[in-house]
Amino acid sequence: MEDGTMEHYRRELRRTAWRAAYRQRILYSRELPWLEKDEEPGPGQRRADEADRSVREFVDSIPFDKGKAVIEALFIEDKTEAEAAALLGISQQGVSKWKRKSLLYLRRMLSSSL
Image (cartoon, rainbow, N blue to C red; front, side, top):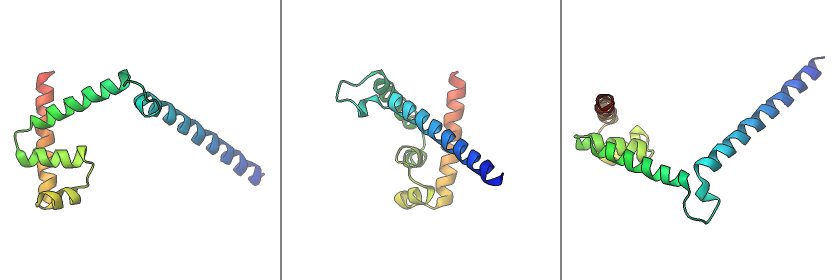
């Protein structure tokens, strides 16, 4: 009986994993349709370009140069705090401080504009 139960759970796990992978492929193809086709960019890519411009505008609105550089390194270039610290020539604590300060500034700016 134990073998049958384990096999049942394995089948269910495989089925669930397949469904999750399938959903991810569908989402990926919707979000990045231009990767599959050599056509003109679709509405999904235009929205992504608009989002990139919006993010750039928000990052550029940060009044602190170090904070701007930290946010760009961490979130746009996808670096770790240690990598950003080495890149910017500051300590990892400094990166953490500037990240916290800059995100707080962006949060306040966005909440006041709503």
